[in-house]
Length: 107
Image 1 (cartoon, one colour):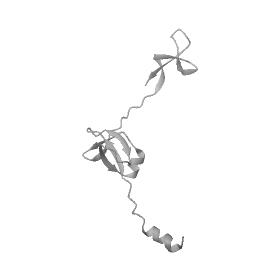
Image 2: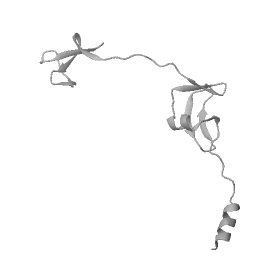
Image 3: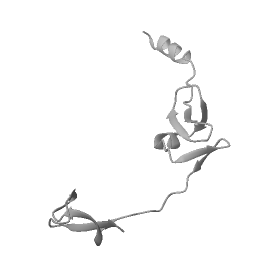
Image 4: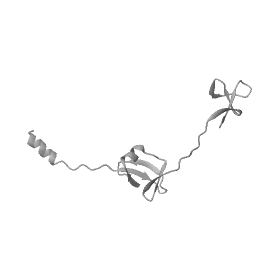
């Protein structure tokens, strides 16, 4: 192939289509899945960053992505006078109250 033939082929290539990043949702706006394929269903176009994150904690309202409020509930197990009896060497092992134990409850 000559350089002229090579460049002629390059000039006749079809234009590259920009990808369409889609967020598919149901009638209530809940995220079903993200896809670049044209699948039947309701969808909106999103940017590449939103597509890469593929968050399911959002809703679609009037064609816009809305973040749901975050729940700020953080709990931690702490030794307690009441709660679940666990082996003193391993909290994963639940024991009866008549065995050596440490009681744990959610703070």
